Length: 217
Image (spheres, rainbow, N blue to C red):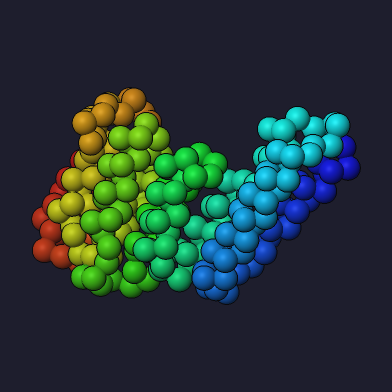
């Protein structure tokens, strides 16, 4: 059992290193650390295929040292902290394609957050945020309220008040279709952050009259 504990401890240490790098916006170093860990795991798998300790099966030995979703989400967060939307998008795509642990709603929310500029800007990557939301539904990952809020914030930062309002309405209509897939009723309901982001989008654009809708929902 010592080998199992040692590998789990290594993954925890890796996740903490990635978190620390993210806090200092050193996203390129975070990606390098993650890639080194994956390369080391690949090397371990190659060794395990030739000689495996008696207490482990080949499958167990091959998977013990691979970075888990906590490590990947920490790396995505590092990209988000530096608004490195290209790197974040590519990393999420790798997970969706099966090159790593299966992503969760948190993974999508973090990657979408990387598309949001830190201040209002017409150059925000709001199209990518909406594409991620649609892909998320297509791949059967049901969006949470936090995911919707991230998308609305991306629209708000880009001054796209009409789209932000439409997305809020979509949340308010249970079981509505999104990307050709029906979202289960109650899967995501608007909260205070949803309304505040939409109000900010309408107030900053020419959609002040659309605030009437927010008064009655």
